[in-house]
Length: 72
Image (cartoon, rainbow, N blue to C red; front, top):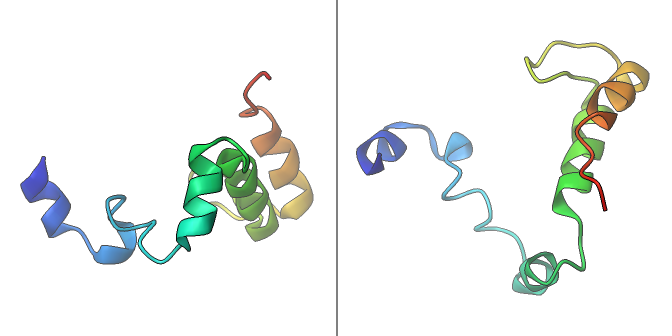
């Protein structure tokens, strides 16, 4: 698995994706004070894409990503 991670571009490597996020924000995420999944769903909705990166527009994307909400 480690070798596979080294062969992918940095921008697609999940081990590196949090490196530029401020420690203060990482701490809040770790404590559950920031819902990172909610923010990611919003970002994907704003980009107007589905899980195959197909353009569906922001309105449809909001509805699409809605189904991935975790119960509270």
